[in-house]
Image 1 (spheres, rainbow, N blue to C red):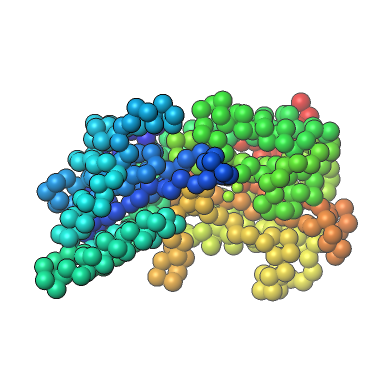
Image 2: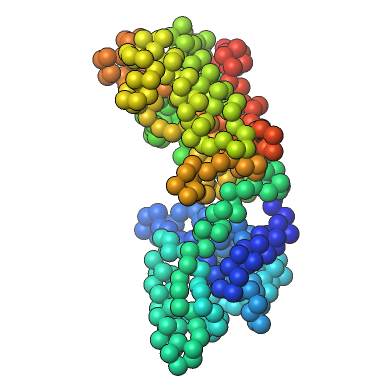
Length: 436
Ligand code: MG
Ligand code: MG
């Protein structure tokens, strides 16, 4: 399952309509070195891939509506028999046109010759000033060149705009084909989480669970994890971004797993917390049920017209009431919310966008206000409670417990759909797997 070619064609049309008479230049992601002469596995820049479907490094995509030489132009690495024996097949100039739909394609080393001519015909350049520093410098050079010519030619690029304003707004709304890929990513992650619940047992290392999860991802055809897998047993679950996964698990402790695979450039992001090889203890059960109630409340209100802040507040209200009745916090709910004392146990927000990036692009606010949800947006709902092992003011039996439950939620025209609904989260469903 892959995003079909015609979806990329449609995106390019909409993007070019938005940049009107400007020219957009998007560089591929730079190659990064892991150590000495070994590179990290290459992954294309999401904005670049979103418009091109082209995953090779050392390429540049140019979008030039109305350009006589072609509107979609790719600069790519040339075919090279010798290099391809070492590092794999390249599409080359011919493949860029035949397989990726470019109107024109050039070898990447022709960029300095061809691009300035295109830029000399327009007023506005759309270019993302990202972390590709060498390309940033070249772009400044081309812009300066254009600006220097303007007094005599009366034309040429004069301003630099950010294409991400347009692209990220597009990426925020998922097309049906994207949702299909996301459903596949989530289905694979579901298998991995269920396997973890069955296989995590006292005496085993957290890493064995990490391995089982990532084995599942790869063997089901996913690229791998879409972010470093968090497999946090016992007190490690109170560390929000714990990724060492190097502790031996103990039976009856909680295991918090925040893991999701990436499939065809789309992320999934799912968290489950369960007792290792056992049933929930009474205190674990109380805290777990509280986080679950908060999460269900947050999800329940998701529909067009409400904001991500509303989701957070709905979940937070349930958490705060529960923390009061479990004697974790003193004072009225209003006081606790006003003073923010709940942050001792719940220090992060409840939701983020999800898509090609795990913390996906797209503005959370518009015109100074939280933006309202619309059909096609995908967000997470992931409240939690984390009680530090050394928190001497917290009830003793709760110290060192960390719980988070996270699902991926699509906003639909009349409400929502929990895309990760198949991943067990009710206490009885979980215990059936942890004690199997
Ligand atoms: Mg997560
Ligand atoms: Mg998340």
